[in-house]
Image 1 (cartoon, one colour):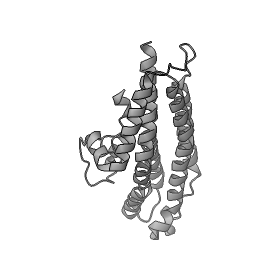
Image 2 (cartoon, helix red, strand yellow; image 1 turned 180 degrees about the vertical axis):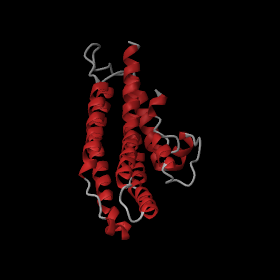
Image 3 (cartoon, one colour; image 1 turned 90 degrees about the horizontal axis):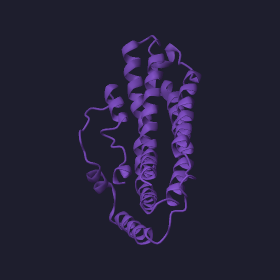
Length: 232
């Protein structure tokens, strides 16, 4: 169960590898343990909150029977696949709609990049809007299952409250990193715009990796749920 709680490390995730391949990171630190990062992020008050949730979950775990009967289990994997497929389709469908700036507009890269920034931010918001109900549903199902799964759902909710805002702020920096790439390509290929299609594909790649980071906690919960189901 513990493994399912581990959030995707920003230094080992596909997102970091993608950014490194696009030369958007000066260095990529290797192997920073999740526990060490958690220790830096979680404040004393947050630690008390986590401890309280853990204690409450442990105390009540043996008192309540699972509410989801065997054979009546929802297919969370199917729900995850639907959301993931919808988001991937949205990412791929929206890209061709972006207007390509005229060559003379590239003299002001910040202004020329602005439509791409807005596009990326819109996609980030859509990912978050679609993901929230899925994560809530998964927690709800786990909360009606075995004692271990109930504890896992409670801990995930606590971690989301503690780390969610911090993670969101980190991911909101991605459009600025993409602007750096945009400026590099504009400068290297002046005065042509034949590089824009390739940049659009790179932005899609970053978006998909961004989505993977956000989906990882939900996937971990579902894996734990499926493993728990297989032991009954």
